[in-house]
Image 1 (cartoon, helix red, strand yellow):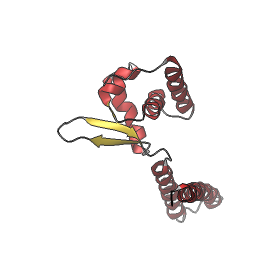
Image 2: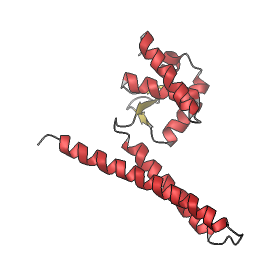
Image 3: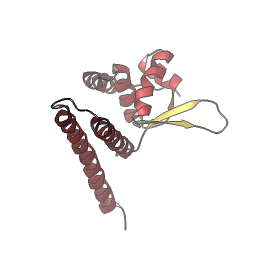
Image 4: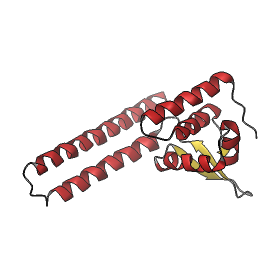
Length: 157
């Protein structure tokens, strides 16, 4: 399937690329995320490449961080060897859950490694960073809880 974007859609895809680039992601990752959000269907790497006029190598490279962060999911279809990509659920719960797990792991690493550090002031500085990761983890979990309760309230009865 050839994906054609309207001029406003193409502009939004470009803007999302710039937004992610400002946040230390490859611009192409933002463009791919924008495309998948707009299209709302599974696309192959070749379809992404054609829609964004991006080389297949660039598509592959820019999909990696999106898949690693669980913003984009890989799919296969029976009878084909192609891999297809789509945006995780519109609520991005997998992304938030992965973020909470990462922050917990970072905090645990700092706390366990910092326990052996004896340099003056280092433990306090490390604990400050561990506290930041705890706050970020708690924030992600609070958003997830709010989204879950809103989803339950919106569910048909």
